[in-house]
Length: 310
Image (tube, rainbow, N blue to C red):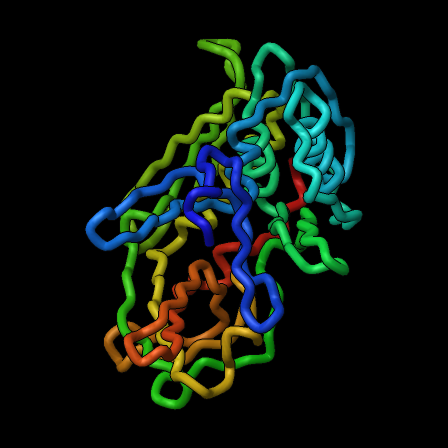
């Protein structure tokens, strides 16, 4: 890479290719130069980071529209509004989820598009999304994809401590526990729309969370968000760190970020057993040139849900 051609501020697209496969792509936002070492470190983020810096400058009402179509309409607005808006390498899929929602976005609110897409998918029975990049002849094409249900693609793979991986550590997030949640919508005072949900615990004391969604006016949507927060906080979230053994299966080409697979281990301290979803993926190269692959995973059930409201 010629450091003289790297322009930060989202002007440079970065692609990471491994064995002919694009494993990550996004934009370079910041950089730090180490003059003594002669290196330039790039701070890059995925494609949604661009849409967080773009806003919805229109008034649009969606009535019983598939949530995947709403997400695509929000993102496509960024390519239609204003000079220099179109990212020509991004295309949009045609997936449907079968879940229809009501949403209203007002021009006066100038809502962050990236934030709106994240909030749209973050309710019970919501969706995951990805920006997948692949070669098409001599061109690199990135496609926005919607994945439903939002529990991760199941992989018939097992990570077993001592056989093909080491579970090196685990964090147990007790402050993630929530027994009652309040979701605050648009309006002020007596005119504010809000909803709550609760699930009293025989183990934990009452623990509350209050979250604001100033652009949401529908009670059903707020209720779904409150219920989702209570579900997520039903128990402390255990996040194991997993180091894969080199030259064994599964390898990096056998799964993707967000996939769900079976993990067993924990050495008796904190049992790790069941379906887990990959939430972080780190690849480094040691001094001998070998790859070191580390995963962080979360229990799959914290992403699931059956409620179709909102």
